[in-house]
Image (cartoon, rainbow, N blue to C red; front, side):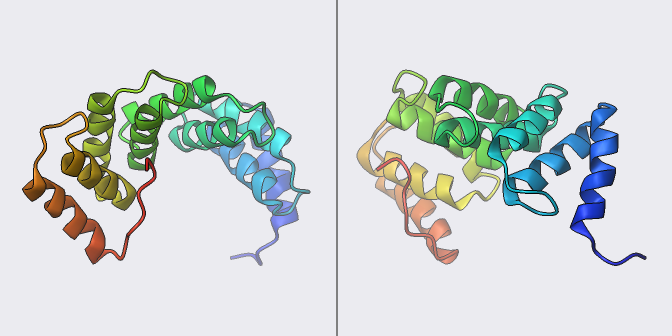
Length: 171
């Protein structure tokens, strides 16, 4: 019922966020992350995402995982990235589960463990996360953390190929 106005939206989100409303903190984090209605500022985005994530807001937990993984507005820290990805993944957030698979495949912030990577990839793949489907296909093709199984490998590759996906994160 009103014209889109990112500056005004940021004003209202700020008022709600300062009162501790997690959804507003998340939305304000997104606005600072993307420079929508406010100057782009990863440090401020991380501040708002952290406040929301500490209240259990799953999108903020996932976004913080990415910020710590890349070092956007915060020091790059794989262990802290894993902390936030884990919180989101345990709430069933498929993209976070897929990232947890990558972390365990690479040993970024956790000991390298293909069996645990397969667990996380499977949870995400079963929700339709195409990156996890592709990576799970690789694990079955190689027998990394799972029994070598070309039929299961082909199953996951076929599913992600239908979506046009051809890239594997952990390779």
